[in-house]
Structures are given as C-alpha cells and as structure tokens.
Length: 429
Ligand code: AMP
Image (cartoon, rainbow, N blue to C red; front, side, top):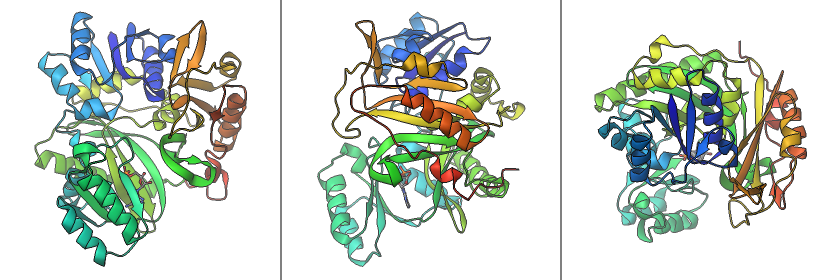
C-alpha cells in the first residue's frame, strides 16, 4: 500500500514509523513531514492546510490510504474532500470533527446523553457573558467555542480576568470566529488522563491510557503548550475507572453521535479529569494526541495499518490490540522560548548516539535537513521515548537519551512522569 501521512509533528513521525513496520506498507509519503519522516519515506512539500493540493497529490500518486494527523485539516473537511474523489482517508468528516472543533457542540451532546462533564453555560452574546460574571463563583474556565491553537481556554480566578477574556474572545475576536460563542464552566479538581479510541461509526476499541504534561516548566508552571511530555500507562487509571468510562462516557457518546446522525470514523480521544466522583470529560479530540501518540505507539505490538483500515471499514469490533506490558516515558525537547518567541536553524548533535540506546525511539517534530545537518525548525523540536520495565526505568532511559542530544537554547522539562513514580502506583490488573 502507498500511504500518505498528513502533518509534520512528532505524532506524524510516530505514525509513519509505526505504519512503515507493516508488511502491507510499500511506500510512505509525508506532507510536509520533517527530517525524521524523510528517513522513513518521502517528504512532499505540501502544507497540511492545503487540502486541494493534498487531494491532487493523492490522486496523481494513487495513494491507498491517507492518515491525517492534525485537527485543523479534519475540521476543514479534508476527509470529505478525499471521499468525494473516492480516496480512502483515516479521520472523521467535517461534521463529525465538530466534536473537537466546537466545544458548544460537544457540551450539548454530553448534556443530551448525561455524560459527566463540568457544569457549563453557553453564550453567543458578550453582554450576557459579562453579566454572568457579576454573579459567578470564581474560578471559572472560559473556552472559545472553536479551534484556537490550544490557546482558547482561560482559567479566570476573578471577575476582571474573566471580563478581559470574554472581551478578547467575543468582541476583539482574538481567535476569529472561534470566539463567536464561548463556554463558561466550573473548574474541575483532579488529575488528567487521555484515553484514545478507534471508532468505526458503531463500535470502538480502546488504546492504552496515557498522561501528558501541558505546561512549559517543571512543577506544572509556566504557559500551556502543545505538550511537553507524556507517559503510558497512566498512573491514575485502573480497571474500575475504565469500566465507568465505558458505561458512562463511551457508550452514551456512541449513542449520542448516532442520534445526531453522525458517523464518526477515526480516532476519538476524550481528555478526562479524574475527580473524587469519577471521570469527567474536559474535551473531546478527533485525532491522535501529540505527544501521547509517541508514548503509545512504541507500546503497540500489533500492526497499526489493519487497525486503521478496520476503523474505516466499520469492522473494529473484529480487532484486538496486543500491547507491550512495559511502560513508556516521552520527553519533548523544545526551542528555548517556546511557546512564545523562539529561534530556529540551530544544528542538532548527538541524535545518532541517543538513538543507539536500547528501547529508545526518537521522533522528530520541528526539524529539517540543511547543509548536510539536522537543524531545528519549530517550537517543539524532538520527542524522545524510552520503554522500560517500570515508569521509573523508562524515565531514566529517556533522560539518558535526552542528555546526549544538544542544540543551542534547548529546553525540556526534568519532571516528566515524576508524579507517577511517587507513592500512588495504581492497580492496573
Ligand atoms: P480543553 O481544550 O477543553 O481540554 O482545555 C485545555 C486544558 O485546560 C485541559 O487539558 C485542562 O488542563 C484545562 N481545563 C479545561 N477545562 C477545565 C475544567 N473545567 N476544569 C479544570 N481544568 C480545565
């Protein structure tokens, strides 16, 4: 099969790496890819946002399957465009992708199915939202309805912060139309967990659990980022929570989508807050997580390609996934200054040395090959994953590999998965 992977991050490198191992994979294209994907297959200089060019490329090159990494092309309807040309693509249609692209849509769906989530009010009028702040109990979470590059969620501790967030989103349109409507909801207390599911329109198959680290600095300080690290399995997940999750979240969600007439096919991953009263949904994502994918796929023993195919064909109920029982820890290396301003074009050294270590996988994100060298080309530069007999072991191996990689102004968190080693190792039996 000829496979096209759309995107250029660590997630896409991990997907391409895993798909390359399939005996059915003949050639992998990555659009636009990075220096890591160039070693696995062929990079194609088409941005993930240029849907028309991607369709033309897939047609001309007779690709058998396209796997879409990022949320934006899914929300823009890339799968619908491919389907119109009878091209197979893994991911939800534009209508189904609303589960991530519209927080109002997701909230209404959850309400209709009584899926546990934060209590929320929805506003399309800034005056009403501002009035609501006069009587609200703080803190509250303010969310732009649409996609806002991970910046559309503000935790407001007082009325003044809430008012300025509402004004920026709804009146100044900082995120364009994404802020036409907003959701204001209660703050949930607990620990977060990511659950990935392959959903085929009727049935779903869960992947292993993972946790990510969103803040830029150690101790969960600093600004939110796309993700600074992850580990799998999650230490706050267990069989009891999984049973509750299936009964109270996944099955009602499947029913809700059916009732809305939406056939969701692709990867659906609810971000959960595990509270003292059980799991609550923070958000739904309609694609693989980044960096969770880099922590999950090295643990997956099964061939990913037939699983993606079964998802598209509505046959995921006939599949099972075999997992490596070992743990993974993934550390993200960024350009200094990310998620704010940063410089690129720095030479990266030590990659070969790090890659030689046993059970270490290096996935590239913002990298490119120039002048015979690998150079930085983005905010998140590399993700380093290690497998280990325990999270502690995986963590040591991951940081050993990280210590061998160098580029000017390299930044990474030193405390990825540290909380999983402290006291509360959960019952995963
Ligand atoms: P979302 O895009 O809705 O997942 O929000 C991004 C991040 O904001 C989440 O991963 C949480 O860390 C945080 N967050 C969102 N909603 C809430 C909430 N109701 N209570 C506490 N934290 C939240």
